[in-house]
Image 1 (cartoon, rainbow, N blue to C red):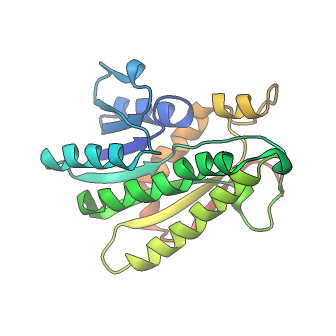
Image 2: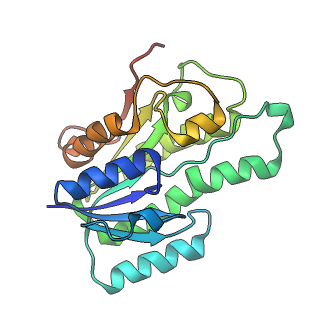
Amino acid sequence: MKTIVITGAGKGIGYSTALLAAKKGHTVIALSRNIEHLKGVDNILPFAIDLADPKAIASFVEELQKNAQSVDVLINNAGQLINTPFAETTFKDFERVYKVNVFGLAELTRCLLPSISSAGHVVNISSMGGVRGSAKFPGLAAYSSSKGAVITLTELLAEEYKATGPSFNALALGAVQTAMLESAFPGFKAPMSADDFAEYLLHFALTGHQFYNGKVLEVSSSTP
């Protein structure tokens, strides 16, 4: 059984993946700003954390290291999405999105690296919107550009740690039916549910690094 850290575990993809992993007997360290419905679930250790706050990240990692907890898998799933025409966005809009999607992801990964097994796997959740040449949509300048940054960061870290491990890969998702998607695109129905994707994500997180490192896998049932 593995120890898996999942960010954004309070709802959506993160929540479904945390429950599935725990049900299969893995130890899940679930990070979210809201952890009430994660408390008392077998095999889940919930931590309330705001990834936009580096002090909160440092405090969490210090607690983990104090207990000598080794990590096999880190799933950087937490995300911030706004759907606003570019001309109407502000500096603070971009800052809010990048603080979670890029800065928080990078800080948590950097701080956790000493605790991650050399044979471990870091999976970064990106988006098809961040993939070069994919279809782009108005209103997602902050979100999609941040997810493009996640892809590049993944490739860079895989190169930097290829001799020592862990492995780094990114999954670029198409539309998945979550509360975040609904808030950004009211009424839109995605072809995939969070539970459906959780099955794929958990399997990839546990086995994908045997075949891939520094790769971006597009997970979408539509084209382009």
